[in-house]
Image 1 (cartoon, rainbow over the protein chains, first blue to last red):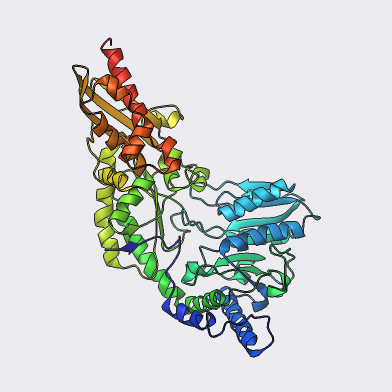
Image 2 (image 1 turned 45 degrees about the horizontal axis):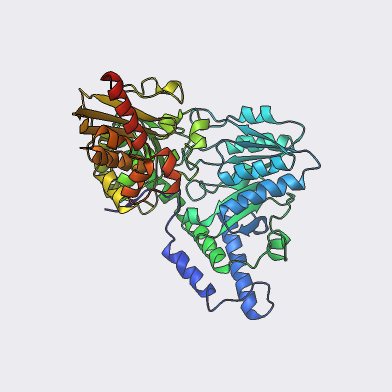
Length: 398
Length: 123
């Protein structure tokens, strides 16, 4: 049985989305800047998609800038706003829960002379609004915080922090790539100035993202060139992908409630089953979390070997283990939450989607505990970690 | 990403477990980095008569552990000592470059187990 439980990595595109996109690959191939009918059709298709995406997050269409991805939107927000406001101050606040596209943009800003504060979450991956308030200085021009964590599912108090930012006239960006399509996301209700989205996270195509930029928010382009996207993002538009993103947004608006209920029920069943296995820790916030997200650290075994054995059974999941990453470092998010690296190596993340079923959960609850047991039989650690928690050089006790 | 041999040794590891009355034990790696290998050897007439392993680690680490036990079994201590990381990797049909250092602990653990035996047995 094939069980795809890695919806935080990407989602299968909806049939309706593909159908909406198809004409724009060949028949309607016009450049949206051209003034003859072929171009105007493409222009209209993009503007319709802009309305659909705006509708999903309760924004105005002119506040949506299409990008190639969520990562581009994050780069654009961080670099674009920091540079636009650098003469007011050169301090930026981000958190250690952020995606690499935020963290590496922040490091780039440091090279340009900005000071960046990296806020540390609590053990559940939650950032207290008070911590943000304390980090603000007279130099702060931008705060960026992830809406929901792909690794541990925790939903951050974005609304409260947006309010703090507004009081101090600081621009506030949230990375809502993982949350959009999984929970309601409303820019007015949340009070954010900028927000990143990626279409493939809500059953749209890859290669399409967007940055919400509130009317009046100053931002410098990441890509200079022509007048596309109001001169804020140059390059001939990826018309089919943008159309697909619009369609996916429209479907999400009408289906979201049902999707949430479905994935929450499956997630809770899986969580209850897996937590019966000894020495397994549930990571992230128990309540303030994405409905279809279950993350664990399984002690005494390592994530990549878990993933490989699960994959051999047709079960596809993610891990924050060092060995599954090209960087060969345990997940910085898990470490920043205070989870020791030897435990973080046993990280495994299940994320549910519309296509998952109860049968898949039953099958996984049968297979996964056996895999844990099998890998633990291979492990030199059985009941504890011995003296190894004390430092890098220690070796396991029997 | 992994060769057929690595997958085979990962899915069906050989010589798993511990030897309660082992003549030598070697431990290599550290759990902070994500890979720890423990090797147990039983020695008779300067030959490795039996060998078992326990490993905490990724797919490569488990495959390397399994492979080194197969390579060392039946060899004299002098021969076994000469097995290199490269030998193990070659036998496994190659390892991804990023796994060559952190997960290829077999040869080092085996040397430590042999050293441990020699220390205990005045060799």
